[in-house]
Length: 301
Figure 1 (cartoon, rainbow, N blue to C red):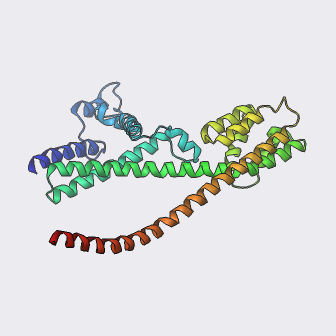
Figure 2 (cartoon, helix red, strand yellow; figure 1 turned 180 degrees about the vertical axis):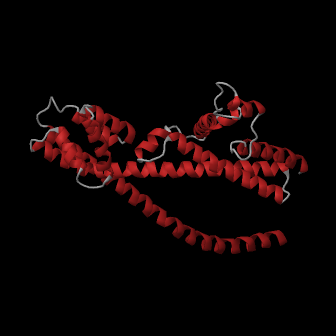
């Protein structure tokens, strides 16, 4: 245990020295830096520390971001972090999210290692617990983001049939596609309205309607939205676009209805699991008694 404690103590001491060297009250300036202000034409040095120490904030965040992305891909997460953060309208950037995620993971791993050393756990088990705790913290944060992303996609999928009906009515009433999208974005605070507000903002920047909607579809990644975008691409060619959108809304409602029926059937099947177990266990007990009695009679005769 002492062999593992000494390198860790040395590592903590080096890290504390590097961190404290960033504070003016701790570091001691070099003689050249102290003499430079008194020389002819010698200005005040902007930094009295090594470049590697003074610029640690510039090279450590990319390393943590790259390590977090590699670890997420190794754990089976294929979707880009930037896309998921934009989908849920997160305020943090991908680098900030990865830094916070990796910092919490490393912190929990360090606390687990300190606890293992305090409890005098063997080194192999301590390393295993440390890696497991760090991976668990990383996965928990990744799962929270995945849950938020999936919930937002589900909200869009459930709200899209109603929005399609409203969009079809507005287009049939003579509104242009841009005006219809603007009116839908101002109606309520649903997930589709929040995303449409961003689409309208892109339209105000001079982007084409189909291009702005394609950007939204690439971020949302909902199949029903891709089908709607295929119909809206015919805005300048088809005359009965409202009826086509209404048909798509009807198809979306049927899809949501089928999904709801599947969920109800799965839940109904799950109800029978405890009933089956509660029925089989007493039956097995009643069968076991005569079976063991018959085995005892045949073995004794």
